[in-house]
Amino acid sequence: MIANLVQLAAEEKQNPLIPPGPELLVGAIAFAIVFFFFWKKLIPNINKVLEERREAIEGGIEKADAAQTEAQSVLEQYKAQLAEARHEAARLRQEAQEQGAQLIAEMRAEGQRQREEIVAAGHAQIEADRKAAAQSLRQDVGQLATELAGKLVGESLEEHARQSRTIDRFLDELDAKAEATR
Amino acid sequence: MSADQTELAFDWSCRISSDNGCGFPAPGLHSFLFKPIFEVGGFEFNKVMLLALITTMVVITFFYAAFGKAKVVPGKLQMIGEAGYDFVRRGIVYETLGKKEGEKYVPLMVSMFFFIWIMNIWSVVPLSQFPVSSVFAYPVVLAVITYLIWVPLTFKRHGFVGGWKNITGYDNSLGPIKWLVSFIEFFSNLLVRPFTHSVRLFANMFAGHLMLVMFTVASWYLLNSWMIPAAGVSFVMTMAMICFELFVQAVQAYVFVLLACTYIQGAIAEHH
Image 1: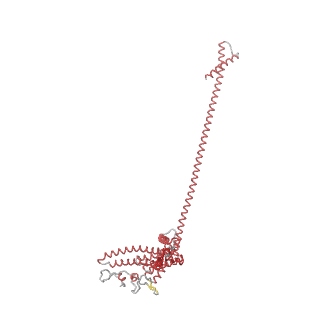
Image 2: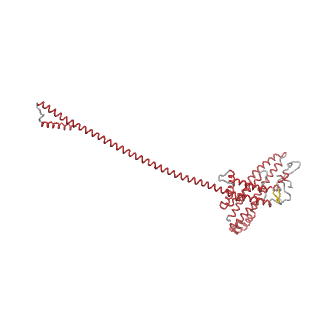
Image 3: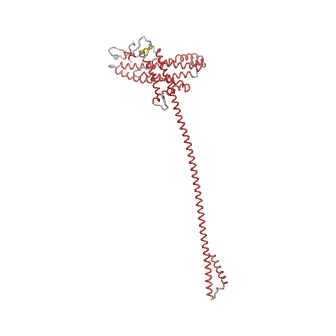
């Protein structure tokens, strides 16, 4: 290295602004090699890759966009379905309520009817019993009264059937009185 | 006088206040001249040429490793390569020329940027320690390539008359001074431009190398008896200059490529 640095002969021209021919040639060759390598091989190489990368990134963005849109539409679909289901449920509940109310009303009406029936039957029974009782009472009272009257007057009135009309009339009067006071 | 300066810098006995009364072996133009390593039929192959060819190898090897089998999902090396590639493509070419016009200049500008940068970096790499671009021939090659692109492009875009108007900035609205303006523009654009383009890079690296050599040599030269503290200062300066040079190397590569793009942009643009 020291030997390399030793100055050239003194008579060598020393103007640094006059480029020596051999150096120009070497410089041109050295640069030409670099340039051609970049021009023909390296720049196309890297540009291709950069383009691929750009496409990959853009493709990724497009894919993401598509997925986003799909998710959005699915969400909307779900929301619609959910709303529909809610609506349906509300409708069913409403229907059930209506049916239940109707059922209750029906049962109530039925109960009412049965109660009335029972009450009416009871009344009729009572009425019939009363009438039967009244009937038998009338006969008994008539007979007893007749017997009593026979004993009192000393003769049998039984044969005098016509007298029974008098008793009946009397009893009817009693009935009417009782009706009026009731 | 300068015949043995370089040798003296490596002479162990050549120190300040040494007995042999040797002066400071200051760096100079001789620091940029190298004895040929070998000679083939009058063609002298020297260290700078070797470094230029190694530059080619380094750039190609790195970018082949990074982009040779480029993947959509990049590895570390590819990521670094892409960052560099993108810096030149977007930061310089698209910024000045736009995507549409700039696309076909991307290979040229990317290769130019990294070629210049690595040429510059040899300045601080141990053992090489010489910026290839501080030899004027190398910036000249790249400036000439740029020149050969933008000048024909101007005439291709604007025709013969339009091309001259573009280059000279000829404009009737300037009135009588238009001839003066045109002359100055013609001079600065067509004649001086390739010169300034290449000299800007060359001179920066040339000056940087001189500074580095100066402080390095001084660090050694001052390392004697009572001047040892001064040697320390010089050594610190060497380190500082190395950091500064690392910055300048990148900036000059950037500026060179940016200017090349600007010249092409000027050739494409409608004349003002």
